[in-house]
Length: 259
Image (tube, rainbow, N blue to C red; front, side, top):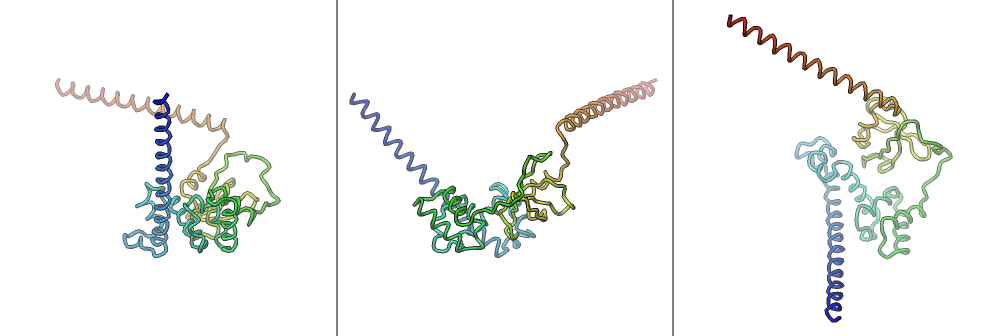
C-alpha cells in the first residue's frame, strides 16, 4: 500500500512538471511570435526587402518565408502588428496573433478596439481568442444585411480573404460565386450580400487560381474525366504502335544492309 502511495505521488509530480513545461513552451512560442510580428512590420514598412532585390513584399515572403506560411501567414502577422499598435497600453494583454485576429476589424476605430479588450479582460483575466471575438461582437456587432444566401449556389463556393494589408478591407472574407470580369480582378460577395470588385493582387493567390478554373456539375465532371481517360489510353496505344513500327522499320533496314 505504501508503494502504491509513492507511485501515485510520483505520477502527480510528473504530471505537474510536464503540464508546467508544456505551458511554458507555448508561452515562449507566443513571445517569439510577437517578436517576429514587430520584425516583419519593420521589414514591410521600411521596404528593406528591396535590398535583397525583391520588387515587392509578397515576393519577399514567397522567396524567404514560404516554409513559415508564405505571404498569407505573414499578412496575418502584419494584421496582429496593427492591432498591437492600436491597443496602446493594453498591448501586453494580447499574447499571440490568434487573439489579435478577431480585433483586426476594429483597428480603424481604436476606442472600440480598446473597449473590446477591456470587456474581454472583465470576463476573463486571461482572455482567449474566443473571449476577444465575443467582446468585439458586443462592442461593434457585425451588421446583418437584408440579403442573405437562401440556398447553396449551384456550384461550390470559393471562400476567399483579402490578404493585402494595404487594402481598406484587409482581413475580410467573402465568396466567389460569379465569373471574374477580367484576368486581374474578382467579384467577392460578402455574407450580407454586398459585392466587392477586388484586384487579384489583394487576394490569396492559391484561391484565386482555383476560382479561375471552370467548374462543372458532378455528372459532367465524371463524363469529362472518362473522356480524358479514354483519350489518354488511345494516345498510349498510338505511341506503342509507333514505337513498334519504328523498331520494325529499323530492323528491316539493318537486314537490307546485311544482304
